Image: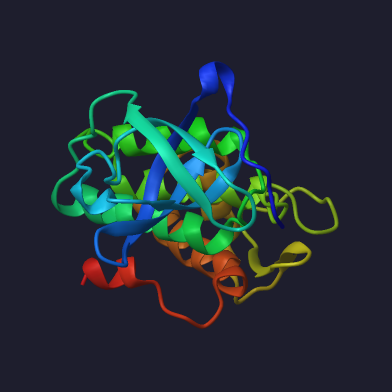
Amino acid sequence: MTTDAAPGPGGLESVWVLHSRPYRNSSVILELFGARQGRIGAVARGGRRNTLLQPFRPLLASFSGRGELLTLIHCEAEAPALPLKGRALFCGFYLNEILVRLLHRFDPHPELLEPYRATLSLLTDADMPQDVLLRRFELTLLEALGYGFSLDHDAEGEPLNAGHGYRLDTTLGLIPDPKGFPGDALLAIAAGDWHDTARRVARDLLRQALAPLLGDRPLVSRELFR
């Protein structure tokens, strides 16, 4: 898909840097996540010298050009950078990587912007388990992309039975299977009851759900957790 760059209100669009890589002598190619245009590819001329062009800092930006790769013509800080460190930083890199891998350029998903910002902000909250924050965002992302599934009803629309097992069919949803995920854990996830078993099941379930979308190439950010 191609696009004509157009300014948002006031000529600027709220964006976050998802990824950057060097380009030519002093420029960078950015992957950005914006309120209006979704994932944006842009060249920032002289961008290696611009300390604003870092992940986890909300920016206001404008662009010129058309096609798959726009040109960043202006950016300014919208708010201070989020202070992600240690494991919280790795979680942030994971969120950025799956957005780059799963979002198509210039396919807007404004409903994801606030969950993304909120998840990043909560990663530094000691009272919020980081894995739960990631699982909640993964569920939100799958729903936004059209791959969501019910956690309290099976693929036939029948309520889940806490005493039964279920496997995930990524095209249909949950299917009864005695060797599958325990129904009581799936119901706990649906109810927001993130006990230890529910967290383990959610990790494995969401990894299965995302695998066909991510493909065979490993996620670089997962290696950081090792």
